[in-house]
Image 1 (cartoon, rainbow, N blue to C red):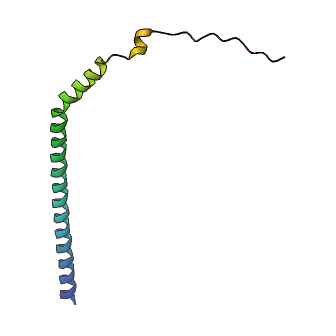
Image 2 (cartoon, helix red, strand yellow):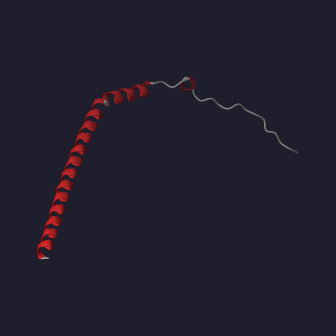
Length: 84
């Protein structure tokens, strides 16, 4: 019986070690993928910066329509209607 329990214990520790190394490998792969995605995002962000800045400047340069040229317009005067 001691041999069987020893074998079971050894198998369990080997299984734990294997799952631990597998988990560590997966974590390392996820970390590398996250880093790669982050660098790709930074690269795309920097490349599109000029387009974003120029479109914002174009938007700010646009003049208001006709309302801005006429200025403030007073409302028309209407006589009060009183009920007696």
